[in-house]
Every structure is written in structure tokens, then in C-alpha cells.
Image (cartoon, rainbow, N blue to C red; front, side):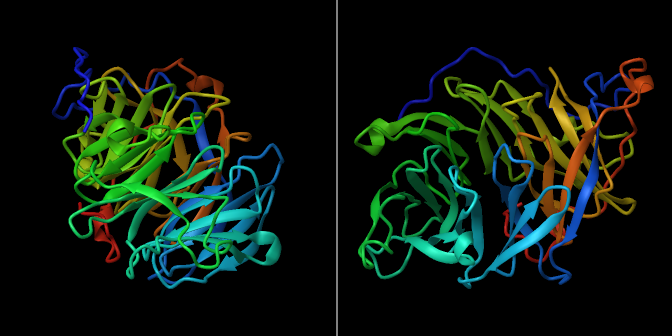
Length: 404
């Protein structure tokens, strides 16, 4: 395993909770308000696990929601929202969905039973390609997946099984469907993680760079152009926690959220994160309980604006969301998200329009649009809108599968 590169860079945040600072919020940009609200399911036992969409320059874009009942519902969104298809060809839990980077009509779905399928929406959601590991009788259960930026490779991260946790690779050009059931697996890595591989993230521009995160606490960065796993493992970063989600920021910077709802920002060459925010660092009011807060994911717009964190609070007063920017020593209010009705499980950003899409445990799909604050609020007063607090934590759902 590659050595962790040493660094003298120190953390720029301190441990421990700070009280609310009434002068915070200088980066406040305005609000996200509800543009479209679609009830995907009214079944209280069925909720939205994840959402994804197509990054096109068209005024309309495709959206997909993966549900806990193992189905996937696809929509076209613009001024209104239209349901296109319901995909339900596998009875295993969905662990990830993603549209093709090159076609709004192809959607990839990864399942816990070890299968990844590609469906063509032009053919009413017909499965046109399948990817699995046929080298053994029993398929390895998947916990994560991603697609390379050039749509050449699929990577699937497995649960810890038989003493190993695998990252499996398939060439999208050669699927089981095209090989008459023969194994289309290119190969895999199994020496770099010691527990479930919960998240995978291909670099947005470097097709051979892949980052992986695991409940073993490690974020590994691989150069897939190398011929062996040992040579491919370029960086190994120790979060000292259990990794939930990771993603790429500019250049060689990564963000990571943990299962304890901590946010870490990394430079791949460093031995520790250059910024680290715990729940205690969220901009809560004095009477709010940090344990009622949860992190959704980082959004890093490439065409406008700065990266921000979508975070939620759940309380007897209601369900609330905020977008937070990265201050030097704390997270600061960036956008309020007004009108949320649920605990949010996942979010996606449409780059062209800046629309934010969320889905969650009430089965609601929301599309949010930005509005600027009134002139009176634009830095004329350093006060930020007061925050609202939180009811039930994410752990309260019976179906919750995360370890914390």
C-alpha cells in the first residue's frame, strides 16, 4: 500500500462547539425556493434513496429517483415535470443510479446483488446491457458504483466478503449481454480496503483517476493506467472515521462526509485534512442540538459559484435545509432552502440552471431555484436569518442501513 505523504499543513478548525456568532453569514446569497414538488410515492414505508440527472444545455433535463422498494422512476423536468418510465427489473436494493455522461436516454442502475444494468428510455426502459462478475457462483454484493467521465469504465465497490473488499471494473463496451453470458469483468482490486467500500468517485476530467472510501476509514486514490493494484494506489488518506460519501473539488482536492456527519476537505498530497468540520461547527442557534443535524452532500458547480454543503435539520418545528459555504474556521450560511417537508437523503445539482434537486424519506422530489436576497439583506447587516432546529435524526428510520 502506498505511503501516506507527510505534510506540515495544520487543521484550520478547532475541536469543540462554538456558540452562535451573530456576525456570521457574510457570504449569504439568498434562498432556494420550491419550483416543483412531486410526490413520487405516498407509501410511508417507501422513500427516495438517491437522485441523479442529466447535465445538458437544454431547458429540460432528465431526473431519476431510486426508491427503497427497488424501483427507479424517471422524469423529464422543465417548467413542469413529466413521468417517463418506471424501471423495476430487479428485486435487490438499489445502491446507486447514474445517467450516461453522453446520452440522456441511458441510465445505469447498480444493485446490492452484484448486478449493474443499463436501460434505454427510448425502448421503454428495456435493459440493453448487464455487468456482473460471473467468476464465482455467488455474485459479490455491491455497496457503491460510479462511471468514468468518458463512459469507458464502470467501477463497483463491494461489501466486505470472504475476508476481502473488492473494487470491480467493467469495460462498458463489452457487457454480459453482448458476450452471451460470458464474464465481462476486466479485473479488480482487493488489497487496499479492509471493510465495505461505501463510495466511489471517478475524477470529472481525468478518466484514469478513481477515489474510493470505506468504513475502514480510508480514502484511496488510484491511477488506473498502472498495471498492478500496488502501483495504482497513489494516495491513501486516513479519515479516522467511517466514510459515507466522497467527491472531487478542483484539481486534486477531495471532500468527504462521514457516517458521524463530519465534513473533511483534503488535498491528496496531505497527511491530514486541511479543513475539518464536525457537527458542532454547523451554524446552529444556541438552543439547537447538533445531533439533530445531518449532512447530505457537497455541490461544486463548475460553471458558476463556489462549492457548498447541503445540510439538514429535523425538529418538532419541521424539516429544514441550508446550503453552507466553507469559512476559515466554520461553516457559514450560503443559501436558505425554504419550504422543505422531509428529511433529505440525496441531492443533485443541474449545472446549467443552478437548480437543486432533492429527494428524501417522505417520498417527495423537489426542484429548487435560486432567488437573490432583498437589497436590504445584502451585507448591510451582518446578521443571517435565524436557524431552525431539529426533530428526529436520520437514524430514526427503520430502514436506515448506515452504521451510525
